[in-house]
Amino acid sequence: MVEIAVALAAAQAAVAGIKQAIQVGKDAKECLGEFMQLFDAQDQIQKASTEERAKLPPEKQKSAMSEALETVIAAKKVREMTEELKQFLVWSGQADVWDEIQREHNAVVQRRKAAELAAKRKAEEDAARKLKQRKERMLIVTVVGTGGIILYHLINYIIDAWPAQ
Image (tube, rainbow, N blue to C red; front, side, top):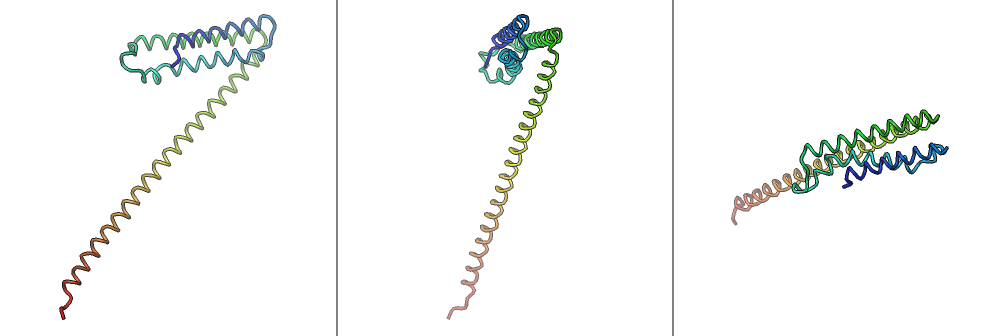
């Protein structure tokens, strides 16, 4: 699990690097690594909240309020840094870069959600198919077993009822 403080520090470093690069005249497109570091840190902060902390043993977990506070404050700081970076890009004449980033981000999120939904549907279909197969096997076993019992008793009846010669 990535600590929220580490992810927040990475985001701050990325924003500072992007600002410095733009101030010395670099194009925002030349700051790919820093942008990736910022958005990776943003994702790490979101993931570090409940899902990964719930996996920790109870003795290593923080109080619910301190976890909530840490997560909310870190997420707020990252949102503020992202908004500040957006304004910095707009005022440096590179608003189109931010718009492209947002469009691509939305497209990636949609693709990931679609893939996740498709995987979930496939898992549900597989589970339903396996359940159906299990029921069919149980039905076959029941029919064959019942048929065997009936056949056994029928043969015994015929043997017992056969006239002795």
